[in-house]
Image (cartoon, rainbow, N blue to C red; front, side, top):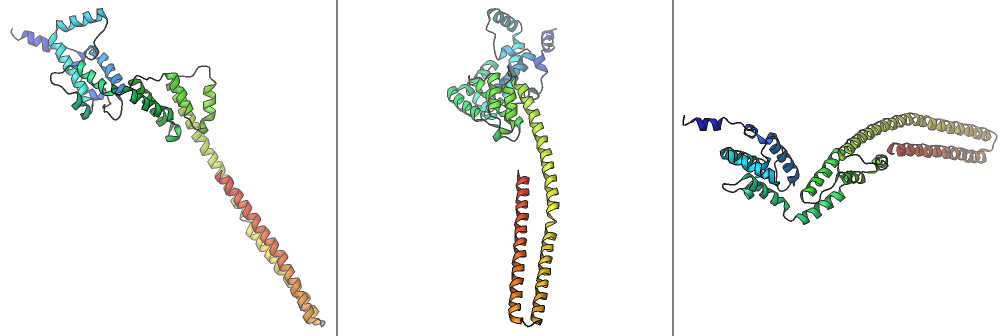
Length: 313
């Protein structure tokens, strides 16, 4: 019978006592470098509410709530102390070694540990806010490979600004998202700006991702058309060498005719003079056809340059 109160105490159930791995519920490990305190605190408070232990880190402030809380605490102080130790354990398990070393105190309470963690991220708050605001203002899609990475960065910076007392409302977050987009998204920006009411950031982000997919598909199609046109022009220009060969054949034929004339003149006794005329005539023939060949060569080169420029564009 003497053990019955103890047995009764151990059989009491509380939802917070059922958690064996808090990291599965709070996947962020808070550290001083990442500046994710706002996200970490938001996730932590959600789990504290779900498991009915929020008062252990944020005590009530209203008079009636304070009275009810103190009454519950006094009704079963051993259980309250155990729950407080559980919440303290959650804090220790979800922060980095550096933060743990900074906040660790013997016989601590969850409320005091929570306050010390917050203080680490609120020191030099104004300087931190100025730095983060500059980063937020200068963020551009040009610095990221995808719109998803770009939007993640904007959301992270806005969360950090909220953590240091300089929150960015959803409307301004959408405006910043549009302002940082690059030239290919100019039509998207125009459509969004002309809306009477801007959508929420989550909605605008989804629309931007769809626009990105559309632009990528359009670029692929244009690349296929360009390659097809380039192949067609390349096949047409391959006939040019045959034309040049024809020009050479004509030149050779012309030269043969001139030689025949020279031979006939030599037979009539005008050897040297006719020969000279023949050579001159032959020379004129060669120069004439040579000029045409050269012109044809330049024309092909111009076509090639044009096709190359088109392919490049």
